[in-house]
Amino acid sequence: MERRGETPVSQAAPTAQTAATGSQPRSVLLAVRAAWALVGVIGLTVVLMALFYDDVVGSWADRHEGASEAFAQGGRVGLERAGFAPPAFLPVAATMLVVTAMLVWVLTVFFHEGHRWGQLGLFALVLVAVFASIALGFVLSPPPVFVVVAVVSLLVEGVIAVCLWHPDTLGYLAGPWLDGPDGDSDGDPDERSGAGPVPGAA
Image (cartoon, rainbow, N blue to C red; front, side, top):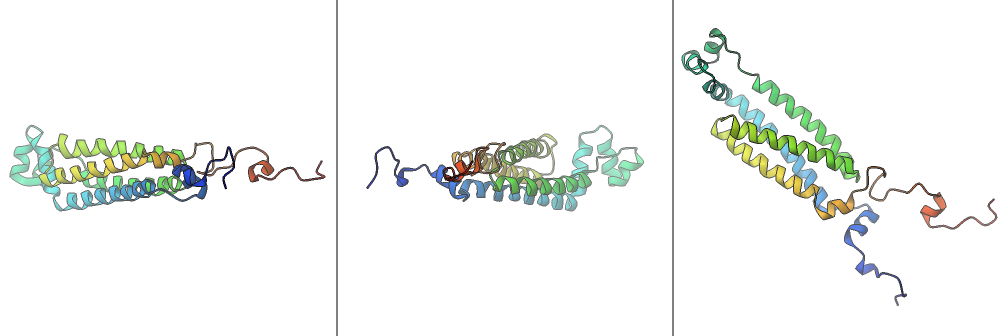
């Protein structure tokens, strides 16, 4: 029998129940998996760049006057002889892979625990990844295989963004001033536990 003024347990908000029990909604889990999938896409880009490095350098040479002729005659050695120094695409891509993996590892740990700044950090990382995907996949006119990878990367980044701002995710997250989704307030410990004052206490 229900008492007046009390909300039935069955009518409680799912997000509140999720926060109270500490379980993670599916949107949070999917966001974390998609973030690691993005790391995998970057890793795939590094591998493809190593395999098609001459094509990448050739694409760069096509956009610079005189470099295209030098590359057509002697490849990368021809560029060096002509005084052209193409960017170090492969080392930069490998460094980006390592940095992204470390950031995802750190941010997802705190995101799992319900910290809002973990969500905001992942979203900032997604924005940077979107910019890089558009620039490297479309603006710089890379080989066709990298255009396909850029499209896949944009799809993964879209999934991450949607999951990060999903209502279930927002309901799970705590404010940056709290310890977690069920963070304690700064009040008296007896009040947080629901217990009244101890009889006889001063």
